Length: 323
Image (tube, rainbow, N blue to C red; front, side, top):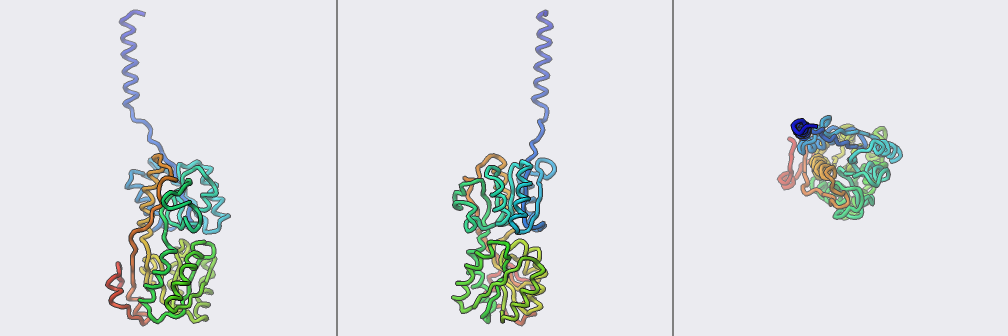
């Protein structure tokens, strides 16, 4: 080969290499599994929003596989296995039972718990160092049980017998019940637990509350209760029971009072943890985050309908008052 031909060919090769290097490389599309008890829009959207703020666009550079299976661990276990079989880069598990199911399904795929009680359920070794393939945000639900009773007693001083509504399929209900009992009895309130397994048992539970002389009801934190909250609030109103819950959505739908962390904000924060594990961070070394802000919401329309006068001191501390 003549030297001139060689130089030309070399130049063409370099040009081809330069063009290839300059050509846009295909973007990685991350695959994310999502396991939850139910499709709850106001709890899914915060995660999507948080991911979008971090540069993830569903259908462009991230694909989310959604699975919903109630609280029954056998069903959740099957759905978790389906997600694992898809080989996702990470799994987001909303609430405690789905996180337990995801943990049983894989010890290698990163799992981000988007609210739950990881310590009481023995999902992680500690909040500071989870020590497994799981990180996330803790609901801090059980620890707030005492404070919730305290606030409720301030709002409704006449409470003497308190009904506690829990979900028999969610272990967090049992943890919250264990914490609620001493807090109630310290305030001369007799608590009584009413567990249900489905929305079809709610009417019977509220009828039983009235028969046993309950003067108010605390609705324990539970994702399924969130989907049934309008039915729950309607039943409480029908029985003339002031209702305390964790989430302000209950108050917006007619419940009397709520006290707890901002759940959508916590879920939005979990998106940052998803981003970290997708970029290579080890879940075992990412501390479990806890809520730092707790919201108090009161519905004065409901108070008036129940013939209650909410103390001005409590109204002054409220983050939201519906008039």
